[in-house]
Every structure is written in C-alpha cells, then in structure tokens.
Amino acid sequence: MSRVRFLFSKRGLAAFVPHVEMPPLLSRSARRAGLEILQTEGLSPHPKISLGPALPVGVPALAEPAEIWVGNWSETAAGEWRTMMPLGFDILRASTVEGPALSRLCKAAEYRVFFRGRLPGVEALRKAIETNLQEEGLLYGLEMEGISARVVLAQPDRFGPGFFVKAFTASGFVEGWKDLLIMRTAVGTWEDNTVKPLV
Image 1 (cartoon, rainbow, N blue to C red):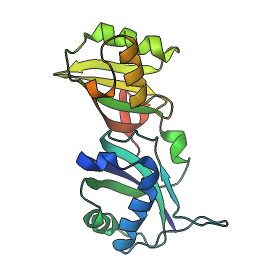
Image 2 (image 1 turned 135 degrees about the vertical axis):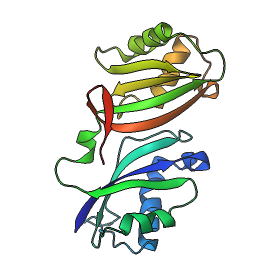
Image 3 (image 1 turned 180 degrees about the vertical axis):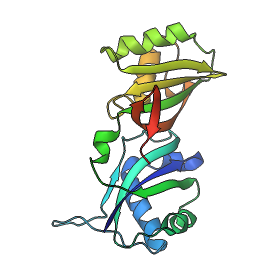
C-alpha cells in the first residue's frame, strides 16, 4: 500500500465541480488508469482520499494538494492517471509520502484576486483584509501584480475566497462575487516568505 500525495489543478468549467464531488471524480479517473484504490473501513466503504481545504464552486485552482491510498503505485502511475483525468483537470506532481496528515500541513494559501472594476490601492486592500481577519499575523503577504492582487493568508481552512468577498464588500470595493475573479494558486506550508507546495 502507498500513500500518495499529489497536486492537481482545475480550470475552466472544471472549477464548477463541487468539493464533495472531487473524491469520486479522482477515484474514477484513477481506476481508469489501472490504479487499485484502497477503501475506508466501516458500513459504507468509500475511496480513501484526503483533500486540502475546500474551495467554493467556481473558483479555479492551480495546485491543490490531495492524498490517495493506492495498492499498486509505480513510477509511471502519475502519467497514466493524468491521461484519464476529465477536461479541465490535471495531475501536476505525485509522490509517496509518510508523516503528518495533509490537513496539518496546509498552513497557508496564495490567491490572485482580480477586480472587475477599479483596482483598490494596496493599503486600502490591506486595511480591508486585516480589519476582517480580526487576528494579527494571518496576512502573510499582499502585493499588486498588474491588474490583480496577490494575497497570502494563513489558515486556508478558515479564510478562503468567501472571506475576500466579505471583506471587500464590507469595505465598499465590490457588491459581491460578481465583481471579483479569485483563483487559488498554491496551498502548503509557509517557509522563507513563500508558500511551499506539499509535493
């Protein structure tokens, strides 16, 4: 048995697949690639898969971490699995791992936030985010990159895209989701002022 941690992306219409539908989707594509997926124990066994922090429907992800338990993992398995993924999904990297659970390692997440209207200044954005975080030290990074803001937050299981909508609506920058395009670019640990991927 191998515990395999992998990074996957979901773009385009794939971003509209709900978080709860990801384990069945990943296990079906893995089985099509010839992988033997281990099942959980209990009255209703299901594929043994662990996902990173949930994303709202419609938010693209460029490098999401997940783990799957496989009975016949090999060096070529990731490539074979990649060819069986549905349109809009991709397996980026995969490796067998040991150690702490995935949920304990997802300490930070990086986002790109695009505004459909005028882009607020960096200090106004910082104030809006820090005011709504209500805790110090959770905003790891904020900078403007062209027509978007790059934001790194701690605790991605608590503070995700919905947090940005709430914070920026409260500050009067937007009216709601329709005025923002948010994508998560990375999830991992926070080391040397960067989000370090888990694979």
